[in-house]
Length: 166
Image (cartoon, rainbow, N blue to C red):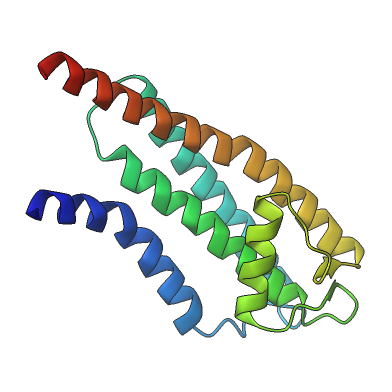
């Protein structure tokens, strides 16, 4: 039972901490009052997350030891938080994002965009917001696919090992 609890803690600990920080930390520095800081932070964080995801996926694909699944899930959650914070910042500019007013709205819109569902209650109406949504869709396509592929390969590898040792 303790081993199972450790596995869940490892898998969910990073994402839960990131989401807790997202809701707890004030994000007032992001938005139209500080555009250079906002865009620089956005770009640097997405780059670091993307490089980290590719590195972890590569390590996992090569069969190198490590805790790839928790790291990949944490990095993917990091991208979710970064896009949510960006949308929240953009929502302070009138006309960019219609219907997005709170952190929950921003997270909701990010998840809906990541899932490519789109409900229409929140939508980008400004050019900058539309560009960031397109960027998120491309980012999700590349990095989410890479991360999920690495995770599914790890699960498959573990299942094969257990079946052989069975």
